[in-house]
Image (cartoon, rainbow, N blue to C red):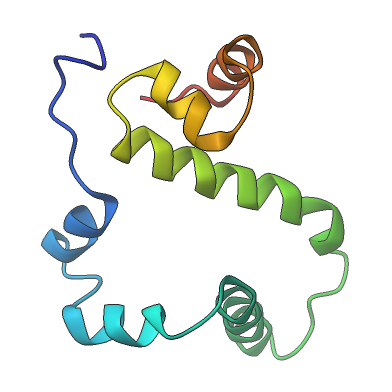
Length: 105
């Protein structure tokens, strides 16, 4: 099914329907910067591992984590691949290669 025919659902709507987020949580998140959100997530991960995030390639993994998040966002908010590429600010040909690599549904 093409992207134009498929009904898009918001990522937030999906999380709400799963009961993973609510409006209060979203209000708190909206007050934080993306850097603060990443720092909070890293701190929570460190707590779960008792402060030992050793041997996790955090520095080298972060660009991939951010790109994955951006692709999840554009795949939900844009109707066409052209729109996705434009939203990300990259040439369409480059986007198509990335799209294939990430196997976005």
